[in-house]
Each structure stands twice: as C-alpha cells, then as structure tokens.
Image (cartoon, rainbow, N blue to C red):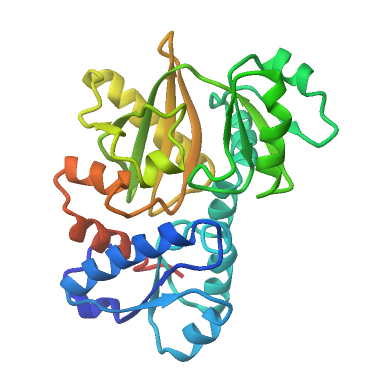
Length: 309
C-alpha cells in the first residue's frame, strides 16, 4: 500500500542491535534507516532490542515496527511472533518465512521439495566420516551453521583435513551444521521489494568467498550493476530469485543469493529476509540502480507494514 503522509504511519518503533552475533551490523543498519525515516519526518524511535524489548514496545504507544534486526531473535520469526501476539504490524516477512529463511538447511529442503535447484549437501555431526563427505561432495566445499547470517561461522574447505576444524567452527554457532558442494562461477544477488526483483548485482572479491570481512569491512570487494548478463539471462535470474523467495513464504522485502556454475546453470544459495542496510549493503545498491534512493527505499520498506495484521 502506498503512503504519502508520514503521519499515516503513526508512531514507529525501529528495532536494531539485539542479542545475536550480528548485533554490530544491525546497529549500523538501524542507524541508517532511522536517519532516513527522520529525514522523511516519520515519528520514528530507535530501540536497541534487549531483553526488555517487549516491555518497551508495550508501553511505548507504538503503531507499527520497522525491524532492522539481523540474525537470531530478530530475523528468525521470534520477534515477528511476539509482534503478532501484540497486534503490532511490522515490516518484512511473517513468522514462518522468517524462520525458514534464517534456516539455510531447511530452506534447501523446501527448495528441493518445490523443484528448485540447490547444491548438493550433507548434514554434519561430530561423528561424521569427514573423508567420506569430501569424497561424495567434492572439493572445495562450504561448511555452514544452519541458522546464522552474514557468513558468520562459515568456512571454505579445500582439503579433507580441514573439514573437522570447519565443522567445529560452525558448531560453535549452531548445533546443526552442513557441508555444501561449492559452485565455481559467478556470484549474484537479487534484492526483492514489494514483489519485484530489483536489478541483479554481480559480486567479485579476492576472498575465497563473500565472507563477513568482504561484506562489511573490506574495500576490495567489487559490485557490478548492471551485472553483465544480457536482458534475457538477467530476467531468468530475477525470476528464479522471486521463485526462491516466494517458496519460503517471503514477503515485503529481502534478498536471494545465487551462483552460476561454469555451464551457466543457476543455483540459489540462500534467502535473507532482513538484509543489511549499511553503506556496504547490497539492497540499497540494487535500489539505486532501479532509481530508488536510500530514503525512498526505507520508506517503501516501512510501507510493507501498512495493512499488515
């Protein structure tokens, strides 16, 4: 629903920070979004989402919530469920889509069930035969905690000897860990806003993969938009991103990461239902390519809360 008067949003709580491993990034995203809404004269109030967040929301007289939380507790359906119970509309995906999108392993299982491509994978435990895993999946491969974002706890594994250490690193963040076959080729990301796929971005980094350092700190990562594909191929990429997002029930806004292998086959890798909104972030970059400046982007994300239950 399109809104022209900032007063129509009422009193807005903007949740940021939180208690997850992505707190640092969330604070940066939240500060940027808060400033954008203040410039548009929205009655917005930043809240660092600590243990008392529900008390603060309950006594603050708020009409809706802009969620700028990343990671567990904010992006996994937990805060969304609490807001549903409180009757407070909020930005972005609902409880189920948030929980699925946060869980990379179950996202892959949903994609498989829906006929979407996903790289081969195996769930790991401390008792796994790591040599057999590498023999089946090949090398290199990625090891990931199922429920962390911003590439936290992820490792790029080049030899069987390194897999045990990579598992231990991922298991530090989550009890569920999996190994995923590495897709060698171009890396793309597609932002989604109100049911529309924005221009795709192709990523280049000297790091072994697009890790936390490359995402938020490095100045060596290169972002290509236009992404270099012809119009027909980019349209295919954007359709796949929308299918991958919708298959987990995503709504409002988000981002889908996709790899293209050497044969040109496209492989969705993961869904992000509350992407970063920092000065290094990809959704603002894609929006800019579509003619949407940062303040307008944040306004449109807030609009996704209008009409919500």
